[in-house]
Picture 1 (spheres, helix red, strand yellow):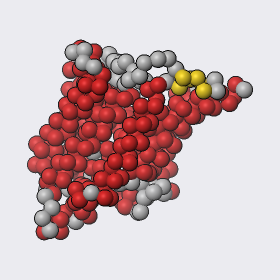
Picture 2 (cartoon, rainbow, N blue to C red):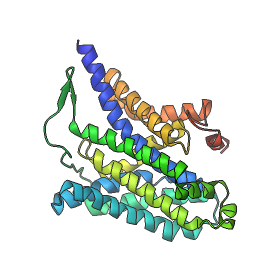
Picture 3 (tube, rainbow, N blue to C red):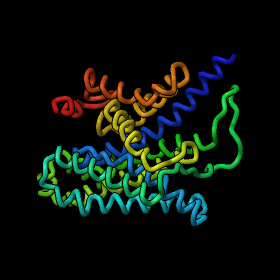
Length: 297
C-alpha cells in the first residue's frame, strides 16, 4: 500500500538524518562531560569535516577512505588549536563567558569556511557503489547504512571509553571537581584538550558521511549545531545513549513533519522539542538532573 511505503520511507530518512544529529549531540556531550561548557562551534566542525573531504576527494582526487581520515585530521587540528590557544587562555573565565567565546569561534570558523570554499554547496560520492536498495517499495541509499553504522560505533566506543577506560574516567573526574582531579595527579589541561580533539573528530566524521546524502555548504553549521544541541538536551547532557536516542527521535519528527505537513516547518521541530524539554523535563530523557541548571539561567 502507498501509505505503508511512504511511512517506511519517512522512517528511513528520519533515522539517517537523526543519526547525524546524534553525532553532533555526542560532540556537545564530550566537552560538557569534561568542562561543563557548551561548545557552540560544534556545528562548524561538521561543516569543516564535509568541506575538507570535498577538497581532498574532489580537488586532490584522493580515494574516499583517505579523504575521510584526512578531513578528520584537519578538523582535529582546528579543535586542538581552538582549545590550546583560545579556551585554555580563558580558563579562569566563567562558564557563561566560555560559552560566548565558543559562539565567537563559531562565527570565525563560518567566515573562514566561506572564504575558503565560497558560498556554493558541495557534494561527495557515496562510500558504496550501486543504486538505491528497494525495501517494500521504499528506497534506501547505501550511504544511509554508513551513517547509521558509524553513529552506532561511535556511541559504543565512547560509552566504553568513558565508563571503562582510565582516561575516560579521568575526563569525567575533571568535570566533577577539577581541583580534586589535580590533587590526585590527573592532568586536567590534557583532558580538556583531549575532549576538544575527540569532539572535533566526531563532528568531522559526521560531516563527511552526511555530505554524499545532503550537500555541504559553509552556513549549515548553525542549524546543525542547533539541532544537535536540541538532541543533547532532550537526551540528557552528558549521556551518549541519550544523545543517540534523542537524535533519532528528532530526525523522525522532522521527517514525519516534512512528509505529512510541510517541509517548511521541519526546521522548527528541533526548536520546539528543545523548548519543551527545557520547560517540562530539563534533565532530559536519560539525564540525572544536571541539565536542569540550564533552566535556571
